[in-house]
Image 1 (spheres, one colour):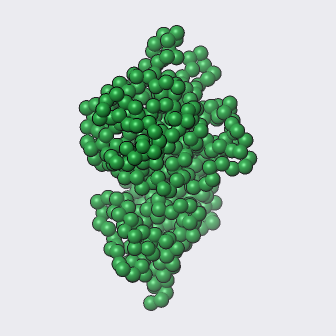
Image 2 (image 1 turned 45 degrees about the horizontal axis):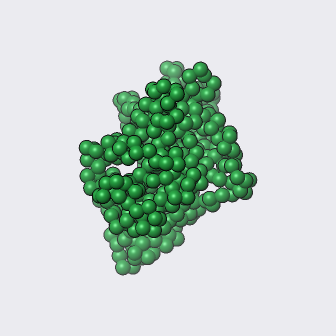
Image 3 (image 1 turned 135 degrees about the vertical axis):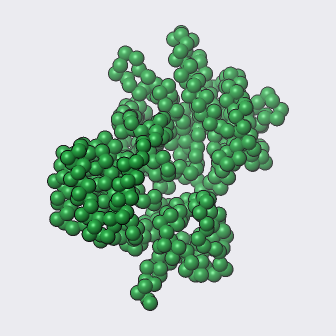
Length: 486
């Protein structure tokens, strides 16, 4: 009996390391978030006065269901302050869910089969092959991808990620290679007694028509000790079902070289997502002092006679690096985002120092925070001055983030244009509270700025409007220091 309960005991020990699960108040929050993460699925565990009883019910539920295990991990990751806390838990999960590896002879035969195979959607296929709570590896070629996937764990009665990867590769390989890859996959599935699962995957891959989806490229500029110097890191997310960003390599840049580095990342994303993406969203995760960076004006293709700014080619928004790392601001932030996402008809938008009495907001920082906290239905704000360039704008942005507002908009110029307030009202009017029109409207404004005569183009609002669109359900980073030594 002890041997049978061994995995349960091991997982209980790993779960006990999370303080939120041993504290009654923490368990209540955990269960609320778990209910949201599971959606329509029933909650697999109920709260108990005893933390031990709660964990003894939660651990078997995780071991029985991949969906529950993935949801529990997602909620725990949301609640912890450091990604390092997750590593021991992930190691236990990997050990408990691992299946026997494929034989050395089989992998060597596959290496020969994969030799020379070129696949444009390699990263996407890797993403589709892993389970929801596993990160997809980045690889230069199919063989490297197979090796990386072979190191990941497999849930009971499911195809190992590397075997699912080979099956999906076969769907895009030339005819002769496709047949050889499927024969190899059949042999391995039979040895692992997973033939039914492989056939099910093969049928779904064959019948599925590719659906276009929105893809995301997130670029973080992390300030270094030397002024004007950054550590640039990017993440790509192209999973239509879940937010699972894949980190790219980091590099040091300056204000002068950052645009060129971003241009290269955009070119790589365009090449990878040419067939799949309905739209590519660019998001810049910036520190408070860098919100004046004109990232939407950076060029997508500088070496042409007709250079195109990023803001004309893509929806470009900024995100707050400061807020992403401040646990004190998360609860209100998530609450307002849930309202914006689930009850848009209740949402309100306000203007700092506006002329409309119903939307006028005092400009003094503490009074502004109090005004926003007093109305939990406010989800967006037009600033009176640009953050990053003015102290007043910086205080207003911080007030909005403190109160949890997910959306703020401003004019980069020292004096806000009256046109911005008018456009803001038009973007949101008649949309039932939905702010999707605001994001689309900003992109439209930026395109319109390049349709006017060049002599007046610089005065067009589309050249200066900035949108901070901050989704708390789409994190990309562990919580590191805001600055680090070179």
